[in-house]
Length: 340
Length: 299
Image 1 (cartoon, rainbow over the protein chains, first blue to last red):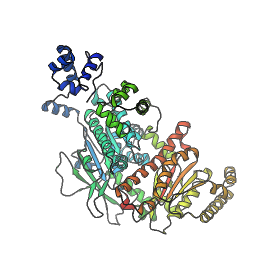
Image 2 (image 1 turned 180 degrees about the vertical axis):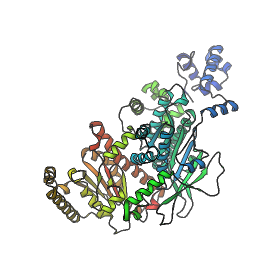
Image 3 (image 1 turned 135 degrees about the horizontal axis):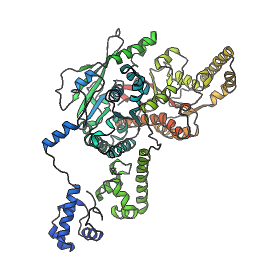
Image 4 (image 1 turned 120 degrees about the vertical axis):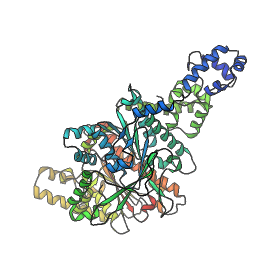
């Protein structure tokens, strides 16, 4: 629905636009779909000029069909699979996070979403030496916890510090700030010459529901519109620049005893291609640990398993959780729910 | 500059008109100018000018950020954040078991929630924290001021006097034991009167007042830059009764939560623009909450 303007393409002059407008042709769609002989007669313009202008406009504004085989080849060469830092989660996701797709982690508060996001950021930055963009909208990003995870994985302090430097954290607490941050990312990536060699390979957004929830519901549909705007931005970023996008979402219940379902409603459910539900099961007290269970709620590749997979984080992470338990001593019992 | 119009904070009616007229990106809008714009979509020239100003501000903000300028959403690497966190202080609670669980005390720039059944001691803990945040740095405190937002009316000044007197005595004992210059100097300004005068008390009787107070908080905090603790005692209380529209309640609570997170974080970044050393200024928040309905209030 682009408005016809002078200079939109060579040959489209101001007088032409005025004449076209007088005959009710204001946008590119109107122009391209009208009968040019008719227009030439009514506006007394040259038919050849109109045809030339139409050709240029079509080339500029239409979408081109792509051959399936070419698309497949392109995907094979540009898609990467990024490890999440947890072997069992990688297995659940069919070996890791795919670039070009949006993956969603959903769970109740305290189920481990931010921890998994930190693990992913650490693993991509340390293991693959790629840059990570972390959009934090809840204030839950704790650099000291990330540092703890990195220390467990790499011995060399230089490596750890370099890995920390590759993770960029942007604090956005409002949906417009989030859209600005994504726009800025898009500008930065499009300035790179070759898109697949861009600096960022993964964008982690924790969380998307925190910024959208205050806008949804009620009689106004603005919240839904802005949510879909965000969804479109995320999907196009993932596809155009071969990024893996990880978002976190909350869960709600229909009634106090109903099953858990993801927040943000049906419209959002079409956005991520993969959805993982995180739950925490209170293990027996003698173990003094809380087990996290991850189950696949939606996947384009995997068959949904009938029973969920227990999420065993890297051994180092488990050890770290136990270590902090031991430090607390007798006060530790009450505190075990807060660690991890 | 190819930013889509839908991602800008424009009024819905204006946005609908722009879309109907065929405008899609920011570029097209800026090229048209206010006169052209008012003619195209049929609004007055003042409105067109206002709209263009909003758009320019957003895009200027974008450009400034790409150029590495500082804005409200300042970017930093995880390494810089780590250094800031390690230099941060905690607000101690004077209960060693609680301090252990929290990893040193109540953390600054984060929201801490205290839930419990009525009578278990939430307001007491909040009052203790409002006094503890004022402990001078030489005694291990953060030397800040406190804002106390009370929705239940359970703030007892005489109890705060008891707590403050005990705190001052405790610091005096430490100063006598160690006999250091800084300690004695700090004690001159750390007295009952100064503690009480640095607790800013607000009483909110219903949810509208609470929301208004929280949204006005950033302005208050920029005037009182030494505030390091904001206590909201009874965040669920005004929302529990007489709320027929549950989705509105969820929306309001979420908006409130985001606003509080902004307050906890933004204050730091606003000050960082003026000051070199970011380590001296932090803001912490603690929220006391009534427990029973917490699960139903969280989305």
